[in-house]
Amino acid sequence: MDHTPTDLPSATPAEPGAPIKVLLADDQALLRSAFRVLVDSEPDMEVVGEASDGAQALAVTRRERPDVVLMDIRMPGTDGLAATRMISADPELAAVRVVMLTTFEVDEYVVSALRAGASGFLGKGAEPEELLNAIRVAAAGEALLSPAATKGLIATFLAQGGGADPAAAGASAGMHAERLAALTVREREVLVHVAAGLSNDGIAVRLEVSPLTVKTHVNRAMAKLGARDRAQLVVIAYESGLVRPRVE
Image (cartoon, rainbow, N blue to C red):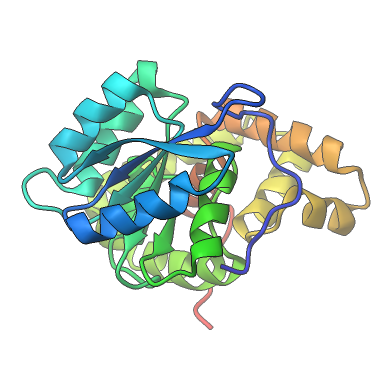
């Protein structure tokens, strides 16, 4: 991952000083075991549960209330996408962040995962430090999206409709466009930069303002647009037409 935010939002689910609670959801027991050893070796995080399918992941999430769920997209029965939608739709699980695990970073389900409420995605071939960083980034409320992924993969899939039903996509775009009208000029400008994958520090440099000011604009934009986090802002920016997809 080439996106390592240095200015993270304050919406951290875990209490200050408390370890980040992680749930591992993957149908491969060997992979879960490897992730558990890695996560439990860190002093600031702990594995609170495992699941081999989406239904089990939802049940364990409701019981353990993890801060971050590492969710495999493809699992038997209830898959990761369906489980993520159900987690995102449950008000009592609003603080839970889901990071989708993919076989390849360029995965046909990535945009669907973001629409379902995931905070981002991570390739299963990622280095150990990347995985640990992903957990910390997601727990802090940041979007786990590299600028390259945002500009390339996200834009390309949204240009193609992301596999969504055209009528539903059109209705969604209209709804987002209406909400955009509530944003100030500065908030819209910040949203464009968020969609480009920039961190708050990066946006602050571009706009010549403080990172705290950027953070305020981002939080206000999320509130007005009904977005869970920055990943959702990226999708809304494209679906509403504020940012036009570019295939490079």
